Length: 436
Image 1 (tube, helix red, strand yellow):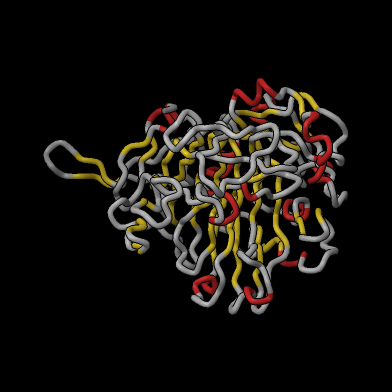
Image 2 (tube, rainbow, N blue to C red; image 1 turned 180 degrees about the horizontal axis):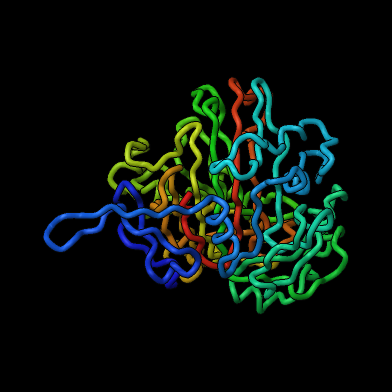
């Protein structure tokens, strides 16, 4: 365990306290009261402005990029609409459903990215951003300055959003296991050239690391709780070019607001359920590994959600995810995805040598200044790729989404709602919990 991730406590209502080794990024507030010799106590105070807190988190070690959506361009630059592609000028139908909302923000100091799911319809447009550090302006991040790029230790790349197919040609900025970094120092690899015809030839220096953190603040409005609304997706850890079902970690959006994640085609493959045990949809299995094990589980095909951590409607929440990509594993299930030629079928089973993809999640509700860890499982078996996937076994993109599963006319929203996102940070190191 890295020192920056050292956390104390697991079950208090206030969440986890960040350990001393993680304090280099921000100066922590003292407890609200301190004991005094003789048995009395004294109140303490700690006043931190929202702008100071944001500046502290975005200037911390390891920060690759960040957005607080203070301008429309931060949203426009990464708007992607199905059937069209990149759409910074909001030309395509439904593209207006991915927009900046200037009137809502967890601290009132910025704007937010809003994905609108309209009554009787679907969002149709997402915010799809490479994990890479990007240049300033229209050739990169939509902001006035380049991304921090981990104190400029990473390449600062360009991203021409005015090209609808730019995302198809973005084949760099990957986070993956060191073995794959050694095996594929350039990309695309010749074995995927037939499906990588939009690329400009093999590139070097395409790897940015072997693990990463994403912190974001998120709110779902009250229409999400309508039980007649379909389930869907809130956020993907994914790739550019295509949102490959076998190469996704998906945070759900559901009427019960429960924090839940899956991979591999929304449950069509046996290792899709990111539970503990993995893939045990019909057997005793914990739904939020590392949190409440007694009352947040599947047992005899019955789901007990009473102990699960859940989002609340119309409330801002902070989520911190740590993703550590492991090796490709095919656990031997008969319905496992066909692995592409770069990742041949492996004999590993759950618990085997290739069960080493790790996911850790911390959360805090608005007003909480310490995290609660609700997810911690480091032995997932992950598929990564299918035939025709032009990416290595790795991640290089983040998607903020309002996509509804089985998006057909029958799955239109019965009552509309919005997914709102603010203060997104990508880093190679732990990110402190907001204090404001």
